[in-house]
Structure formats: C-alpha cells, structure tokens
Length: 637
Image 1 (cartoon, one colour):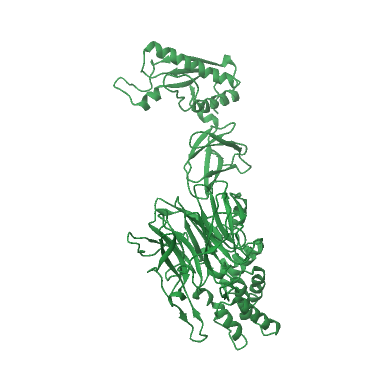
Image 2 (cartoon, rainbow, N blue to C red):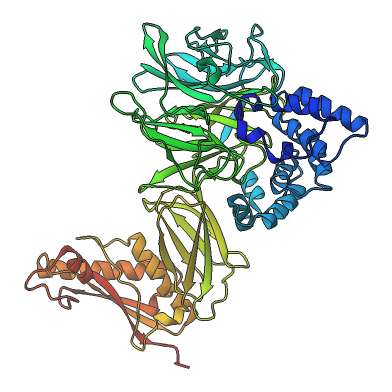
C-alpha cells in the first residue's frame, strides 16, 4: 500500500534529505526524489559498501525501506542513523518499525524517548497517558473472522466495495502498465469483479478508459442512488504538477473525481473543485444519506501529514467547504482511508493513534454533535503491518480490509471478514469500598444486570476490591453489590462510548440499618392488588435476613400496608396475605419461624393521607412493609 498511500511532496522531501547531500549521494538522492525507493536503496547500499556512508545515508536508507515497508531493513538503518543523530520524527518511525517487527518492549522505549523529545506532540501525550496500551488491544478479543480473498494477485490489491453485484477494487495487476519506481510495480487501476450467487467471484475486469488512465487510480465510493461514483486519480492526467528546478523531477498530487452512470457504465468524469495543485485529496467515502463526502488530504491547516476531512455534497452536486474533523481524529501522523458506514460509524486508518504497528484501523461515532474518542478495532483486523481501507456492511457484518501483513499473496492483499461480536464495548471497572474506613472490600458479590433487569453475570471483587465487566457501548446497566456485614446496594450505570467506565461503590456497615425500634430497609413495594415478593422486595428482605443471622436473639414483627383503593375488608385481607408472604420469604432463607411474625394493617395506617387524592407514586408508597424490633436489638456501643 505504500505505493499509493503517500504520493505527496511534503512527506518525502523530509528533513532527512535536506542535509548532508554531496556528489557521492547524487545518484541515490535523484532516485529518492523521484520516489524510486527500490533503486534509491540499492544506490545508498553501495555507498555503505564503499565506506562512504554517514548518518545522512543511513537515514535515507531507512526512509527508503520505510516507504516500501521493508520493516526489518528500515529498523536496522534507523538504529544505525540514530547512533549519531537524534531527530524526533526518526525516533518515532524507528519505534513504529520495531513494533511492526513484534519488538514491543523496544518500541515502547523509543516511544518514551520520543515523548521526552516532543512532550506536546499528541502522539506523545497519548503514549504517556496509556503506556500499557498494547496488551489492552491484544486482549480485547477477536471480534472478526478474517480470510485472504481468492481474487488477490501477486501485485498490490486493496479496497473493496460492492455495488450492483460488482466488487470495485484497486490493483496493480495490469502488466501492460509502466512500472512505478516507488516499488517497481505497475501503475494502479480500478477493477470490477462480479460476485456470484454462491458468494464466489469471477475474474477481475478493468474499468473503462474514462475511469482508468496510464496514471494511478485509487479507491471509489458511490452515492446512495448509485448514479455517481467518486474516485481518486493522479493530477498528471490534468497536467497539474510541480517541477523541481534542480532535479527536473515532477511531483503530482492526488485529485478526487466523480463519474456519472450512463446506462451500464461510467462516463462524464469531472474534476472536483476542492482539488489543488498544492496538495492531495483522496480516499472518498459518501455518507449513507448522500449529503456528506469524507476524504483525506494534506491541505494546509491540518494537524499532520494527512488528515481526514468532510464536506457537504450540495443539491446541485457541487462540494462544499472542507471541514477538518479535529484532533480527536487527526494527529501529527497520518489519518487516511475514511469510511462512513450506514449507521454513521466512521472507520479510518492511522499511524498516529496508539496501535499495533504501521497503519491500524480505528473507529469513532458522532454523539450529541461531538465525535467520540477514536478506538482501535483490534486483532485480527489490525496486525503489526499496514491495515487500511476498512469497509463494512453494518446489516450483515460482512466487509473487506486491506493489509500488507505476512502471509499474503502480493505486496497488499484484500481480506474478507465477518463480524462475530459487537465492535464497540466498554470496560466497567467497579471498585467496592468500606464507606467507613475507605478500604477496598475483597470477596463482595457484584452482579451485572442489563437495561431490562435481566441478570447477566456475577463476579467476586479481587483483593483490590475490583470487579470488571464488558458491556456494549451506550447500553444502560445496573450493578448489584452484596457483602456479608454490609448494606447491599444497587447502582445504575449510564451507557457510554468511552473505553472504560470506572465506578466506585461505597458500602455502609449493615448496622446502619438498625434503629432502636425497627430495621430501616428501603420500602418493600408490592404491585397493585398482588402479594407476591418482587425482585426489588427480595433484595431488601435479604438485608433483614443478614441482620437476623448476625443477631440470633433478634425477633421481628413485619407489618404490611395497602393503599386506600378498594374495599377496607378486602385491603385488610390483602395486607395480611402480603405480611404472610413476607414472613415466609424470610423463613425460607433459614430464619426460625419463632423469630418473625406478620400482621396486615390494611389501609388503617397510611404513610400518606390520600383523603384529598393521591398520585400513582403516593399510592405505591402506602403499599409497603415495615419491620419492628420486638426484642434482641444489639446493644449500642
């Protein structure tokens, strides 16, 4: 993917090639300036063999290999160059190559060095905030099944978007094209592949000559009505380029174009007005409602090499003013390959956010007008190589991602995937504390309930008083905490899109419920005209059971009350049934029948006077049980 990813002037004309050039490096430098990195590496290596190398040559060698993703060679020469040089961006790239080669500890050491050199860099800030990010990405679970696609070639293949039964990809498989000096592969074209009813694919076919030229073409995206296709192409076709006066090397940009469907094919190709000979615009993605175009660009005013932008697609088909998506998405590195899905989740690739190496796929979503923090999709979508051009059908979970990871057929391959689990999840970390001592409580039972009140799972707190749960993003839930000697508690947990939701739950000693005359439980509510014990009632009654077991001499009288609706005699009978049900529940938990009695008070002792009328909630308060201490109350200390 390096052959198309950074066809940009400003990235390649980096600080490494602005110093220490001399007559010995002239040939190699010329290849480098022309993006001919294979030949450039050969020439710089000859200088090393002839004893004419210095930190400039080592740095240029590292850059050449970096641009063709030869990670082992790039690592070697970055290390050599950094023996006598301390350029922050070189240190960062060295850390990325170490990570790409699976040397995570060494990579973190270089990231620490980079963060010290550039503490205000967002990449450094993110690393300092979360230096142990790698295990979290690796351990978050495989949410996708990923398979190398059968239609890949031995050249570069990437992209993959289905439209009208055809898969559109970008590929360098056309051997009739000239080779590109970046990696000695043919120039890229857009291909279509018919998908059969059995989900197999036919042979790839070149898109027509209105779409493909002798220069690079890139990824495509379609409007919802299927009448317009956006795609990228080198600006050479428009005769737009810049020329280096010293080397006579021409530098192109990447432009966005749109084509219109005429009959069964594409025609009427137009250059978009947002293009400029001073910067690149690429990787188009049209929103599901057809009103917004997302793309990546290195236009002035961004935060890094390439940033992700969006622009309105006006009713007349023109494109509005580009809007940078901001620093939650864009870093000092590269953010590219945006894809806005049908549920408005934005997927993109970045080498600036914390990842596994090279480009990783991330996602975010707009909530209440603001973009949520970018999150790593995780393995196996991401690897320690470049992973990009992620596209998904949110309805069935099928999609494509491209990668130059090991084991592929070509330099870049397209991988088909199936989503197995919800992508977005939140770690709820519940810490249970003794409210009196503020010490963590080990061995407390913490139960997670979903938004419908269904029990999901129970866990015991560890020695730090922590129990952890994984829930889906934006899903409300509830935690119930029970521990001997403490007042049990239920805590609602509001759904969030953050990666972690830290909840602190303080428990009071169970004695706090004991007053001189009664056990002060939360109201035991009953449903209208019913006497059965509800889940809420059982939660409170279990506290009574715990107290009575701790104080075996205690004797309790349970009184049950109704509201004033219904005949008085009926209410007296209903309250008596509720009192008996309450007593039976306590007895079922191991309390001797001689220690608890129950009596129904009917509507004779309302908590709220409803003679002038009551609300539904006030009637509910009158339907209650209370627990009076007959004898055996603990002696106050």
